Amino acid sequence: MDDSRSSGGLRERKRRATENAIEEAAVGLALRDGIAAATVEAICREAGVSRSTFFNYFPSKEQAIFGRAAEFAPDATSEAILDAHAGELAVGVFYVGLHALGSQRVNTEVARARVALVAADPALAHHHAAAVAKLEAGLVALLADWLARHPDARRLPGDPLVEATLTVAAATGAGRLMMAEFLAGAGDIAIDEERFRAALAAMALVAGAGAPGASHG
Image 1 (tube, one colour):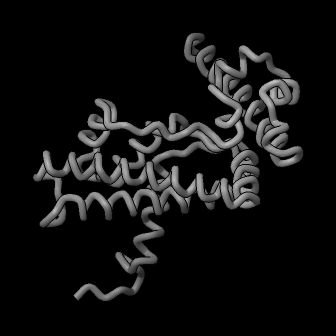
Image 2: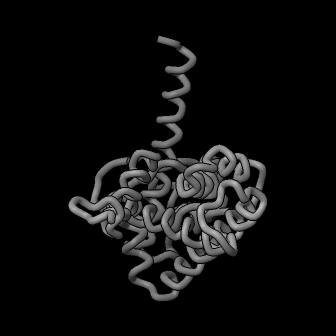
């Protein structure tokens, strides 16, 4: 076994375990005692970590409680991702979204607790919906601009904004389907391309594309 790869994997598992402990403590305290009571100090005590460790993982208690904000802005990485998935732009949008989120795993317990926390407060629900809408609008703008500059990759005539909107809707719809699966699951689950493609395929079946017994002419 390659010792460097083994040590790298161990470091990643330890990093993820610490991140999970902080998030579980933060969301658990917020649900039990209220968001105001879930201070950084209280979260650190609950998770068994120091303040310096906390801030190595999260810039604020809000991000530990609600998750990291999707800091989306068009950049060279987003462009390169779309370039690499020019023939499957919904998959490209999936990877751009992961790049914006900065994470490729879901802690199912934390995810369920966050859903419960947001559902209990209409103001939080509104804030969450606004954040999701902002991310989706950013993805549409990015993809529309990319399609305008790469006409050979387009599948629809007319305004590239239409194709961008439909592509992002397909990608985010598959993402929501994946999240429903995660919320019903257990443990720490990878957000991977295989799951995403399965969600896209399920959506296509529901829409009638390629459905068993469908008429094609």
